[in-house]
Amino acid sequence: MLPLTFSKPWQSFDPMPIVQKHALKTPVEAVLHFQERLLPVVPDQEKAVVLLGSLVEGGKLTLQDPESVQRIRHLVHLIMSMPEFQLN
Image 1 (cartoon, rainbow, N blue to C red):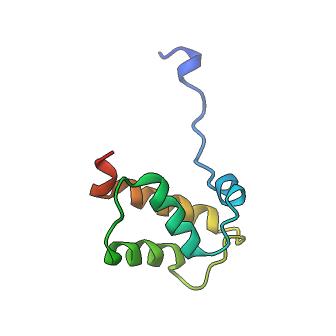
Image 2 (cartoon, rainbow, N blue to C red):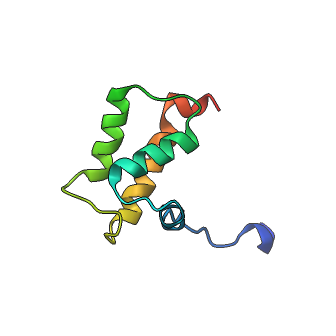
């Protein structure tokens, strides 16, 4: 059995403090921000469109919507799954 210090409950990543700190207001701003922070190179336009599409999938999204937390988590996951991220 793992010691208690290693078996704490896992918490989901909360992107909203980052969104608020950097005053991100639109899905485009969010995609650009997380791309710049997580990727060592700028992805091609096609990949950026896919990332934006994943964030606004299902209709218009404002970053103040309650469901935006889950969508931004998904965006970060997609970015971290990209080959460009693996270059870090």
